[in-house]
Length: 184
Image (tube, rainbow, N blue to C red; front, top):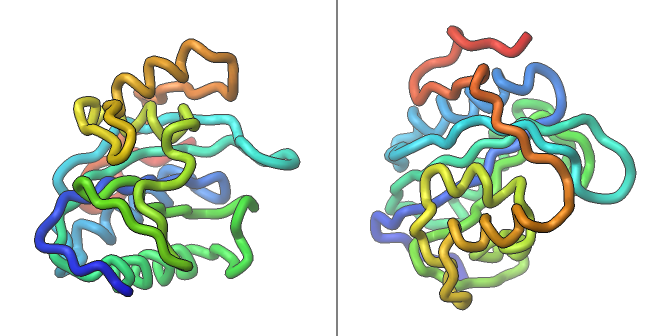
């Protein structure tokens, strides 16, 4: 059953490792800004991260955004998947290179799971490439069912060895239309 939102805060993950990566992230931000049912509240900094998963892939650019919406989560998910597809993501693109990956990470204090969507994101607590940019915009946000904040989880994972997560201060996501800061 679809969860109806009443202007809840939603934190999304944006990732890309194909094409003009910064332009892909910027297109996602511009899409969110223009969406009639979404208010864009904040954007994280941009991070470059090693791929985590089977096989070898190019590095990702990752960012996080905070939005507010009163739309049904599954309607938003459909909209996000249309955007991913319009940028060239293949239908079977899970764990494969992609021009855009847009994931729900947190929705207020909601905990839900169905065949299409799980909130909080199921691997949020174990991935520095997810937590580091999320920490920029939601350090004090408690993760439902864990009692820990994004900031405390991020600090724990930073102490462990793992894939590199590097801040890219030379790459800036502007919440407005794309164009000024293109990746070289």
